[in-house]
Image (cartoon, rainbow, N blue to C red):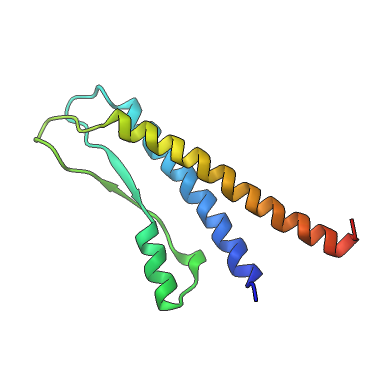
Length: 115
């Protein structure tokens, strides 16, 4: 059986995380020429997996924005290929998640109104 409340909460959380991930990638791109800038990344999937294994509420999982301190001190570590790939991945996942949510609510509408 499908737990609709849990699935809807997970869908909302995924859209929020994807939005955050896009903002972080855009921030990194905007600072690609800033001397000494260290890029940021969003950690979420590992935290979600831990919560699912422990049986906790997925809606309570919060993403973490972490600074990537790799590279020499005082040297910018923004990788444009990585950042643009992240934006492309976010776009594809947002499309998938919104279609999945639309399908879910369309099914509810048909069940309620018969159309």
